Every structure is written in C-alpha cells, then in structure tokens.
Image 1: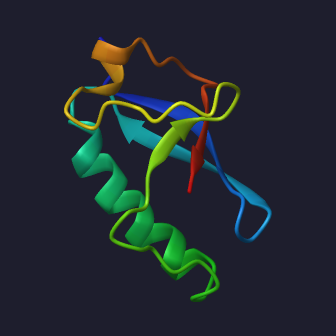
Image 2: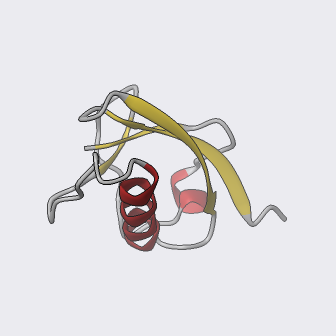
Length: 84
C-alpha cells in the first residue's frame, strides 16, 4: 500500500505551485498544519498562513473535509489542491 501521494498545491496569494508528498492516512487538518508551516518556510515568509486558511480542490474551489484523510477523499497522485 502507498503511504504518501504527490500532490500539487497552488497558493494563489503568491501565485506559485508546489509539488508536495502528503501522507494518505493522516487527517487533512494535520496535513494542512504541516503544509502551511512548510510553505511559509519555503516561500521565506511570503505566504503567511491565517487561522482560516483552507485546503481546497483546485478545479472546483470546494474546501476539502479536514476531518477526512486523503485516502478517504479519494485523492491520488497528481491531485491539484489550493491553499487559500
């Protein structure tokens, strides 16, 4: 079984995308916390996570259920997400 998938995370506020491996069994609220910290560091502070930062599906713009895992949501390698 695969324990991580490669997803693209687009951050509109800085207009950049990042390829990131995320664990498939962790709840998305944990993944979101890790992503916001990592992307803030990677962008040298250009991305400032806010308390209401949300992880969404990039195509639909719909927020993802942070109480579900990537596996439960059916996310696969190549999924395109957005952090707003």
